[in-house]
Image (cartoon, rainbow, N blue to C red):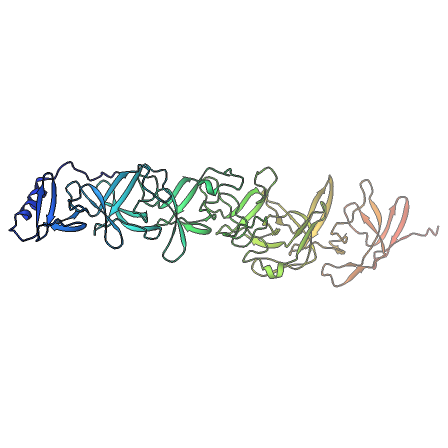
Length: 504
């Protein structure tokens, strides 16, 4: 924006004629009079009028303390010490920008480094001022033809403010604005990529980023400490107004520095656009700021919230205290919650990370929507469609245990059969199918707990019973079988294998 200072070396002919005509007065009447190159206004006694305004034609003129008409200067007048500007002809200006060089003797709040001081004189000729500090004014015209209107701010001396400004509003709240450089001054609106102020740097004095994206409303106020829906997408802005482009941890506005993701607080952003993601993402943990560790699957709502036990649809009051232990690694996860996504069930830890592996749940975990995922059971979360995020498996499933195949059988609800006879095979207390060793057709297996039917209501094989089990897991139900050179007879009612007595 360009503004030209209103100056002129001499009075225009029009102004001379206007004031001159006024000076043609009879003795004893107030009138204008020219003294050399200066104009004065004499009262009816012939004395100079001082420190006041006088009108001539359509213009107002100011008489200084010596009675001379002021020209091309800023005039302070009135009980409120209002500021006005009179041009090179002495006429008071209205709706006009005026600049003066800042020679160091002009105090300007938060503007120590500006070389030019700008003022705006409104329709009444008064300079816009923040009477008790800094104040924002809207609909101030500017531009080459004064055809634009924007928000500007001025200090108590009428100096236009520039750069970053925190301004107290009439409500008592404080708002942050960005007013460009010293020769611009209008409040930024919409998206702006700006240098981050030094006072907003990290505590060690070095910025995490030197620049960042900000969003300013139509009123010029920076969006800070909140989530914002903008043009069809959700964004989150920190306490300084910088758009977050990574995990947001904790409730926006409460920078608690914790790792746990709270409801409505976890949002993931792309580094390119910053809008909040939804659906599946594969990324680093929220606390992995250096992004040097492992990556995991997370599921985000349409508002960017990572699903965990505190998500709105996680039945958090029921899921509290639910733990999951990986039966192979020993890893223990707390406050897990389940969610059905496109007819597939997934399990998430308290940080929103998708879990996988053979997991033993303790406690009552609920799927989103309210249906219960059977508690105190063994489950398998993995993949069967080539994707990498772990979905709950059902049916007979083989698991690679360091090169050894282990067979499980999972019910329709995902819970593994345990201490049960399913399709002729025994599944033990850990859900593993009991199989004979490689190279053996059968082995003897002593049942450690009562083996139930698939419904879990009827004991089929009593605790302590010795049974013959094949390499494929099939329990010998009748007849005889030879194991390690010894022949056994099978009780068709109890499946018990007893050494055969040779009556020959």
